Image (cartoon, rainbow, N blue to C red; front, side):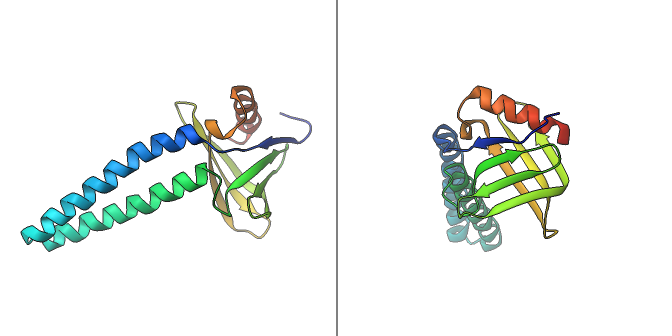
Length: 151
C-alpha cells in the first residue's frame, strides 16, 4: 500500500494502434464483403446481420484506436493514484475522481488493465489502459503494483 499519491502520465500507444488496425480492418472488410455477397444473392436477412456486425466492429475499432492515441476528449492523460481514491485527468481538462467501488482488473498477458468505479456524482466510470501508454516498463509495473490493492 502506498502512503502518498503517485501520478502517471499517459501517452500515445502507436504500436498497439498498429495491432488494432491489423485486427479490425480485415474483420470489418470481410464482414462487409460477405454481407454484400449475401445481399446480391437474395439473402437479405443475413446480409443485414453481417452489415450490422461490420458497423459494430468499425465503431469499436475506431473508438479503441482513438482512445489509444489519446485523441478523444474523454481519453485519460494522467492517472493519480492514492490509498483511497483515483483521479483521472482527461484530454478535455476535466478531472474524474473515482472514490467508491473502485476495482482493478488485470489481464493474464500483463499488457493492459481496466479500472471501474463511481465518481463523486455517483456515475459508474470504466477505463482501459495499455502498457504502451506508459513511459516505460518500470512505470507500468509501478502503476499495476499501486493499483493491485483495489483488485
